[in-house]
Amino acid sequence: MLKKLLFTLACCLISLPLLAADLVVIAHPSVPDGLSQNQIRDIYLGRNQQLPNGQQATPIEMSDNSPLKASFHTQVTGRSLAQLNAFWSQQVFTGRGQPPRSVESPAAMRAAVAATPGALGYLPASEVDASVKVLLRP
Image 1 (cartoon, rainbow, N blue to C red):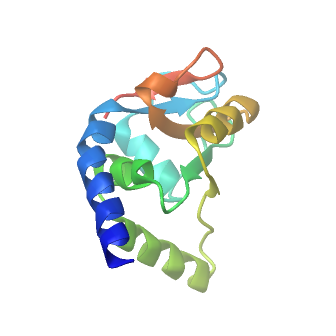
Image 2: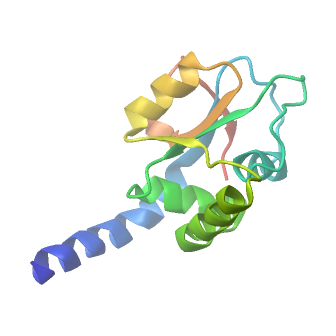
């Protein structure tokens, strides 16, 4: 059991740099171009829920067990998963906000962003298709 866990952890750690170099922030086609990394960070941390065109921003996350989530937050929000979870626990406890909804796979992320006006998400660049647009390559 321990060997299997260590092997899985090693695979995740080995693949993390590959995912980090390949990660892109995507959006529904209705989201305006030119959002900065700071604006995207603020949307994902619940500091700003409105896009520059007045549209409601809807951030979508990968599940906690996805290395993409860790990579995205390290690069874009500057937080580890532990810091992010502590932040959202505090926000929920104080009634200041709720974490973004999450999906289980890159395909589900792409589909959710494509189907939700104002949505933002993140994927490996190889998973992007014409249903979404790339906003940022962190």
